[in-house]
Length: 299
Image (tube, rainbow, N blue to C red; front, side, top):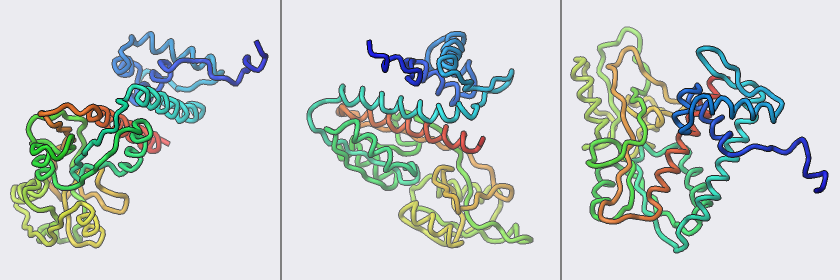
C-alpha cells in the first residue's frame, strides 16, 4: 500500500458518528440526540469521544447542564453538515425514479422559507429527473387547487383538513412602534384578503383587548405586506420566519399570540414519487437553517 494512503490528515470515521455529532449540537444534549439517531446515550457519547480522539481535538464543551461547541467544534461541524448533505444527496440521486416527472408544489407565501431558492437548487441537483412547478399564493386557493388535482403537494397553515404538521413557529406583531403616550390610539392594519387566518386573528385579538383598529392596507401578497410595514403604513401579524431584519417586532403593548404550524398536504388521489422526498428536504433544510441561526446567536 502506498504511504500516501496512511496520511494523518485523512478523516477516518463513518457517517453515523457525524450524524450523532450534529444531533448533539442541534438538540443541545446527549439524551435528546440519542433519541434522534435511535441509539443509546452511552453509544452517542462513545462515538463523539472516538471522533475527538481521531481528530486530536475537543469538539464539545460539556457541563452537567449544557453542551457547547469549542472553536474546533464550530469549524468541524460546518464541514460535517456539508459531508452529510452531499452523502444524502448522493443516496437520493441514485435511488430516485429514472423517468422525468413534474412535481407541482404550492407554498402559502407567508410560510415560504427565505432560503427557498437554495432548497430548490439542492433538490434539483439531487433529483435531476424531477422538474418543478412552483406556485405561491394564499393557503385557501392553493388547497383548492390541490383538491382539484392541479397541485401535488401544498405547504400551508393548519385548518386545511388532513395534513401532516412539519414544525411550529411563533406568530408575532410587526410594524412601526406605537408613539409614546398613544397606547389607546387607532391601530392601522396591513393584512391579506379574507379568508386569511392571520387577518381574522388580528381582528379578534385587538377586539378582545378593546383596542380600536382599521384596515389601512389590504395586499395580495406577503411581500406587499412587508413593504407596507417597512414604509410605516401599518402593523400586521406574521410568522416569525416571515419577519425580516428591518421589520420591528412589537411585544409589550400588543395581545399575546398563539403559535402557528406549517402543514404539508398531499393529493390523496395519487401518490407522487417525489412528493415525500420534497417534504423531507424542506424539513431538513429548515432544521439546518435553525441550527445555523442558533450557532450564530450563541457566537
